[in-house]
Image (tube, rainbow, N blue to C red; front, side, top):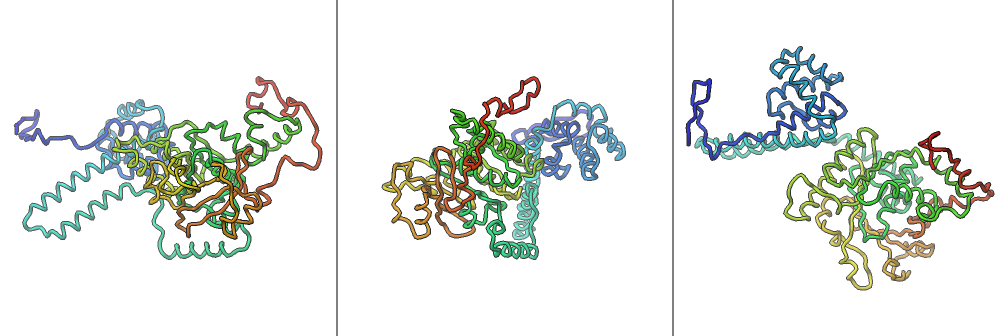
Length: 510
């Protein structure tokens, strides 16, 4: 123990050097968040949703500035350097907040609000840590007091801990019992209608038979689509995306492997029945197909599809991107390809399984917060291939992510026997599956987990040269756009695409 006399003070400050520590804080990030708010208020929705109280800021000047920002924000007034300065003057706190010079300095520390949400979460964590230290000190002191009722102390500890936990409870508010009953009634009414479309209580899966079984992927569902590489995971979820895009339902797609060009070609092939090789390798042998392609481009060019193919699969960045799409584009479905590519760089992990467990939990919370289904692809390990006659995957085979079962609402496995050169024996299937196999179904969709009902299996048809799945008993799904009754004109490729010089129209499709 050492004694120091602080300058300009009349009392001696006793500091226990081994225990003397600064409270948890992130002054530089506080400056970054406030500076971003002063120059780019677009990121304020995320910041205010996380930092709901000015007390989250450690520095007194920053608390005052954020109080002014919150006042402007909740009053639907613009937030910028001038309005914040004016609000602080009205509050008679401008000088206490550092004056106009300090506001200008803050605004010069960042160039945009791109990382404000991420910074805000760290600030919140520091605030929570300070609260934990504070209340833990109080509880410890009371525990040493002989007059303290220990049961009251435990109750107080629990309440204080709940208050701290509430700091991170963002997203949907709790639905009360009575309105929840009304929602249940509406759901039953929808399910009771005869037409297939109205029976959907979630978003379209893209497949009639899966819709009949699930009622569609529901809000807040975390859906895992798992299979070995090459089974068609991306093709299946792209069909789901296309089915919703055709209804003008905004879809977000985060791809860790495929580029935007690859996803565009595959989605276009799925919806038009062009062969994927035609679109990506060989082109068209028949020039009339160029006219057909132009017609399809005109039809689909305004689909509300939002793709991130940057390959940045850090879970925090994925969440930020999803929330940005939700706020700007109102996405109703998020697809992530795939979970084993994802990382969590927010802290060091002892092993990969723990990291993926945390990632799957955060994805489930994201689905609940945005109130949309989140479909996540997953790789299956080689263990399933070591089995006997059947190579059907099981939950235990999901690579590096065994704990995902507790978070997922639906786990689907894609299994194509022909992938392993196994002939389908129709006698191995029940009476519901046999008619589908007779029509050409060759792929099992096994529901290994489904919170809404029992595990089950249905069958689809995989068309390899078109890289797509179809419902064999759905005429609309097997419709061939290229087959036409009336002969088309046979222009050259340039005439068909109406090619123009780039300098005339650089944005024209070539």
